[in-house]
Image 1: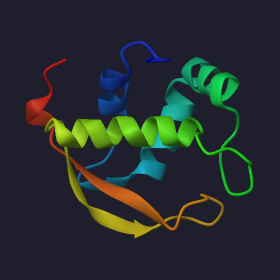
Image 2: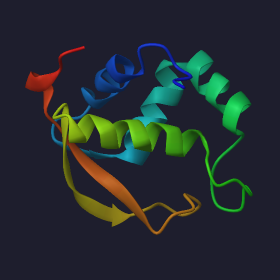
Image 3: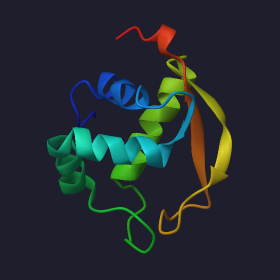
Image 4: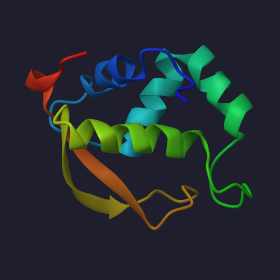
Length: 105
């Protein structure tokens, strides 16, 4: 069940802030600032994320999985992985490059 209406267009608008490559963390930070009511809804549903939060699925996972899907359908391109920032809770973070010409929604 999708928690956030129009999530893919909102995420696409976040990725447009970057000229080339960006990470999941980059997109999450912009999403938090640009769509605070949506971020708050994710936190209410899934709790807070980050290392030691005690949850297996968090708002961070919600955004990361949608970015993964966007890559799968060609909205953005997966470029590999890089180390996640301290406190992220995972050993690697997807690094994505936007592919804006394939936005269909």
